[in-house]
Image (tube, rainbow, N blue to C red):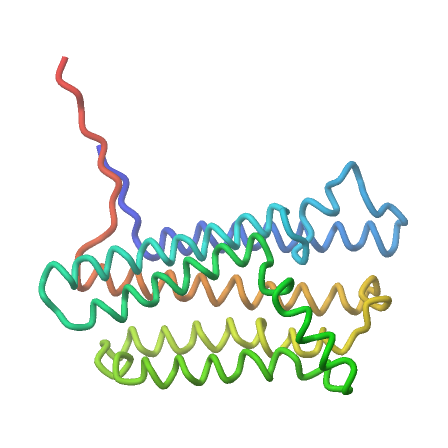
Length: 232
């Protein structure tokens, strides 16, 4: 018996999960802002897209970790075949592993807080994310530019599209949300902003998973889980 993970099937499942989480978060915010029920037995927090240790946080971490596993598998196959680009694939696998850990634990905000505090003093708090993450992003693009050029065009386009969608949320919409002071972060408008931010990030990751699975289908074969029958 085997279960085949086609790109289309996996993406369909992930999209349903994201739709459910987004709707659950939205209903929770409606309950909080319009009905005066901010807890609902903990369900509002449990499905909040902007909270640590929540179901959406767990899903997002799992999705990014799945990217890391796919990247590791691709890197391993390239390595076994003696192809030079395996180092780039392993590098991406490590990056996504760190992103998965950070997504669930929110380490970057703890590390970043001293930077935010300093920038707040000098009036640049709104640009905190840009000043740190944009240089890192540009450095990564510089390192991986030739790797992208060697990928099949369809894969490279999907990688770029996934990256753009993810970064629109992670940097673009996050930048808008960063305009809010801490006492305004309970406002309905902020809930709308972080919902779109997290939605863009989740959709970007789904696009990247689709790109990886399609690349594997053309280069390695379809990903499948095989169950072997035991001899009686």
